[in-house]
Image 1 (tube, helix red, strand yellow):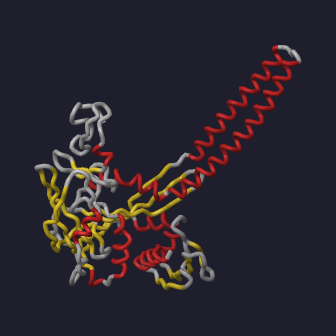
Image 2 (spheres, rainbow, N blue to C red):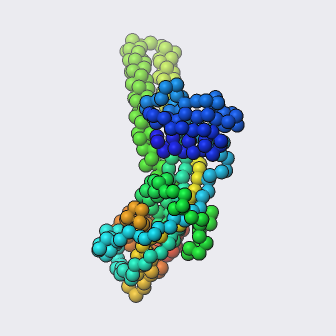
Length: 379
């Protein structure tokens, strides 16, 4: 929780508070009156962020209402930041750049060639979201995405290294953003389209422990209901059989039939109640975005398919010291091997160049997103 402690400390300091870090994982605060009202704290307080608390400290976690209080305090401040990192010299590339590419590019029906490697500047867009999942319990989490705006590559593994690197810098290491870096920044609509495609799977992955726990609790409750109502049905059916054997009147038998039907209705109602109880809603809020310009090694590559060719590039990042991975240009997944379409040489995962269900012919989901290029069947 040290990162959260640093964030809260910085915000309080900007709002005029006197903040001193104390151990274990806490801060001591003297807050001005506006900050006291916004965060519901006294003038002097101690706040703890870890499993162990300092003496007289209140506990604060990401899951607490403090994230909402801080969000209300900041309003729209701090949501967008554009900076440029200047490196005196890029670290040396590994001696075998071809091997770097070989590990990242696996094409099924095309070849490629490395043209050259240049020192360039690229623009990264880091987006930080707050995820709130509500079912029978509530779970809050933070999810970050990183996009390379020069080639559209998604580089999630850069989020933590870049943020950690920026946190370690001194003020003189961060510059005002530059205007001459090409291509231009993405517009809001393009960012929304990409995020809409990639964020659901990442949320499912991030919430998988929460989902697993919820499914276990739901299965436990369903099993209890099933066992309980099975016993009720068995007893009712036994009474019905006994009354039939004794030749009871139809009115007596009808009561037992009604009891069986009532047990079945109650069971369906209870199951529906459980489904509503464990139904999950997920809210996603963008809390901040960072547009970062920094130097990289740019690998310029030519993709060749039949008589066609296409130029792409992949950036080697000096912070992660890794070459970025390619993504399917249709669904933005990283599934390999990649296939290359005939028309515009789009890079595609196996699903996005799969056969049409009507004519059994392959077609590109980027060139023809809504229908088959061969028979016109809607996808």
